[in-house]
Image 1: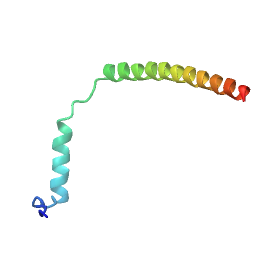
Image 2: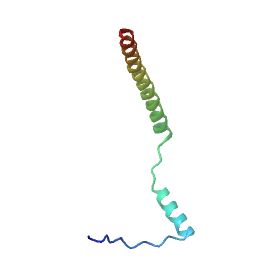
Image 3: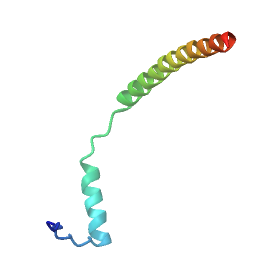
Image 4: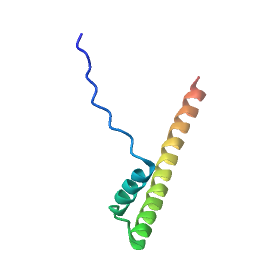
Length: 73
């Protein structure tokens, strides 16, 4: 059998170095504007309502079919 060669492990950074790396990465983040956040929240709410109604319809249809099948039995 072939032996797996593991990559050499990197040493863990010190807590101070870790915090510096986190700050560097956080500064690269592009934060959404207030308008983008509101627009996205409205879109999510609308999609939630549409999907809720869709699944309510599907559930009602399946419920009616099951009731009809149970009446036949």
